[in-house]
Length: 264
Length: 329
Image: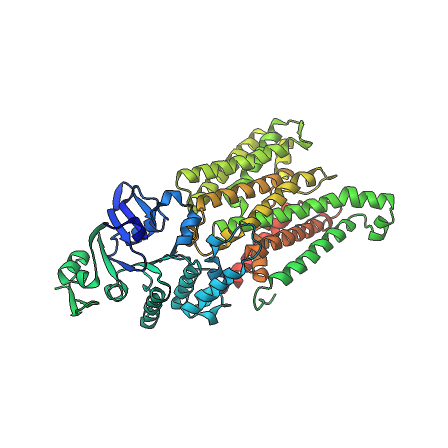
């Protein structure tokens, strides 16, 4: 049994319903400080719902959530945002701001309404986030003129400027080409190594999850099928139950690599 | 108009301030009887009376009305993430018109707070329509599309009741109803100006205090919520503040359309989307714009006066056709 100080984010009996139908749960889950937890599962498994519950965007119909032992109910939206940053999968088609403006808005939970301008530490956080993601040269560009990969980088930089302990990403690589996927994976690994940031990400890309995740959580039909290291989760029998598709494990070991098999 | 390289918010704000001051000084000098600034300053009694009592109050009302309409238009457009939304989209003007039409139908001559009863009646109509729209939308979890649909429904219902009331009225009453709905800024003295001032000023200040929230809303509702914005409360604040502004304006000037659409739309090109600059730019630009419109409305067909609402509507339609034709994407 772990003490509450060892757990960053704890969920107990977490459930969500829509239109009287159970979408998720009950889910019990601990996010440990400094780890990368990858939520894997097929479309409609409830991955996004789980992330939205964990970030406080949805209020669960049942169950409890606590951040470092403090229940979500005791935290304001802004206070929660100082602890948890979220990079949603769906964003508006047009964002009529420059890169720097978007990243600066990541400082929102630290800004006060009566503040005329952001302070020095706000700009320092923006500079740091831009350089971590490696997009300093895009600073003054309108976001609408950027490619899909560059845009994703901008929104990740904005989440980093939020300077929260926990970073939650929903399908961060979904529209990215191979180079941008590897850039992003490199960035997440560096974040963990340099600043000990905790990462929760949802993906249906098993290889990305296996590459980045310290632990994998297999979600299917709104229920947790299994939690464990990549080697424990990326197994043909488990994957077939999870995705209802057959996989070949191309390379075993601690970070196994899979290949999808054709349906017979 | 060639598109600028990039927005120049500070420069544009300075130019807009100059423009607003210039229009307020010059517009009262122009009219059926032309007067000069020298006459006014040297204390010529008839020029002074025309300047201070007849024309300046009207110009100041136009300035405040234009400012309030433009800045509420901006608030609505950001809230609904749609550059074509404006206060009237949510049925606020229709509610106000219904209030005014009921007052005209009842033919009451009493006044309240120094204004003819038609003013508080339309103010109440504007707030009633907003409350109905927001109430409807909140019951359905308050998404912006529900709000827009509820606004259209309320708007159509109010128009239907207005038509019915016009059918029941005699021709004099009907004429006054139609004339009211054309909007106009013909006032004498400073009563209306002082009535509108606190609403417009207060509303603008509140929107300025919400500038981070509004800017964040431009990046999407989900992202805004994840950064700590309470979306439901933000919607409430913006709706209440803008409907108080619009309600107070419609109450004294009737519905004046398209200013809330055109002014923010034009200014975004020069100022950018940051509400810290865009909101004050809308105040100055919208004010100057309506002063100029009103100047044109009272001089173009002189000695007859064109209702300023008719003029802005005549400008607004072609403006949008022109935008559609020029739109690159």
